[in-house]
Length: 462
Image (cartoon, rainbow, N blue to C red):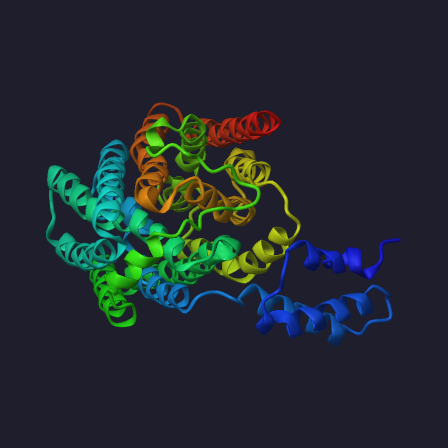
């Protein structure tokens, strides 16, 4: 029979010693947690004591993160709370604008084309001028672009506007990830990434839900207005909360703080010459091609095949962000204490994302949508924080923007290929063939990541 320590997956006392010196302001918390761990190992502990451990775990998960990372997370929460356009864009273009599934696929592919340009240019400008200005102007200008969208009324106009707005919007991504690297320390970088992701997912858990209600009650045009206003609001909050202190930035960038104990760091200055990183990007793109269907063909499938109304689709999509907001930070905290290798974990999460699509053809029962979303969410929790950290920590401060730009291009390329592939499969075959094909790609990516892990192990032996 398992003891309580095994049942609740509690840390061993020596886990803390392996992490090195504990900061003084955390020592009391660690001591109390270790003492409680020793007490809970016998089955006589009360439910209150079990709850106390969980509360302490959450406190430790959020401790020792910089003020700037917290402020950046507030900005992301405001921004992502208005995520209403993209989750419903496919439904809007087919149901309201009258475009065919193929035309909708072409329009959605311009999201990816704009994203490739935006992430590449955003990364380059970040390395040249810093992350601050890129983030502010990306938020401000993309907000203005969303406000303009309700006036678009033709196929090519939609393609052009989507391209421009997404290019501006996604320039934000490499700059934001470089900013997390700048504001965090090597030992808490993954948790800093997860905190920002927590804010993103809290916002995203609300955005689609509110968007679905607004679409039903007031019409789709209000989605563009609300999305635009939250982008502008996030830009103003960013400017207010995080002043641009270039002197501090220059001083900090002179220090090399990129080391992580179990991630190989590339000495190559250009990410485009880093063979292992390029392989990682390709594998990540295989996963991303499937994952982005979460905001493209999947809502259409829920609407047309499972006959779910928009408000229920919004709730279903919002479950993803809600579960991540509750689980991810404690998971990352517990995981990092155990000194596991990151790539096998990323590979497992990637495989679960593939599985969430592979199960869809098995039944038309509405419950399959809930199961699929839960598999997608678990896969995201397991893989996303560590894949972003893996990319960030292969860089040095001088080329963080370029590395995160190339990492972002794996997502941008997926945004080009995914809608084209999916719309072609749906138009020529059916949803069953589509999901089987889409679900296979993350499995291939997962195998590639595990191969990369084995190669890095071999190289480390020489």
